[in-house]
Image (cartoon, rainbow, N blue to C red; front, side, top):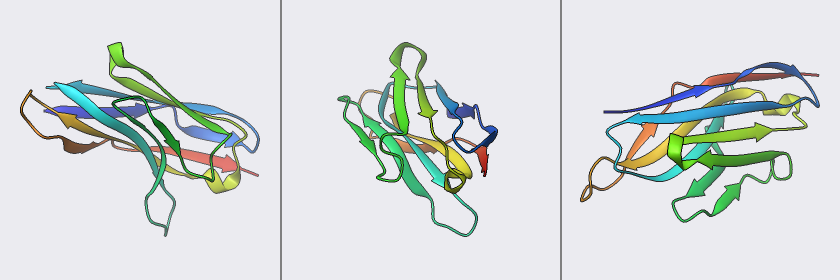
Length: 121
């Protein structure tokens, strides 16, 4: 099986920074994509940042210029560096990955448990 484990959330003041980490483990043949989503209370889950297997980065307009996603392929880990945080960034942040568990398998969706980020004004 595959597991995604996030860490790094917490409570910060507006303008401060946080770095989230997400590590995939288990029966991994290939990580096709890894993404960060977030969901605030009463709102739909939204895509924050993503990277495809060929290295293309995508960011939500609301976080462009403030958030940066990076990866360590050797560790099956992605990071989300969040700077200039705003109260509206307060959400549960989820790591998502599309992972193939063996050579001829299509990718399946996997989600982490989520990590709370709270930004006070």
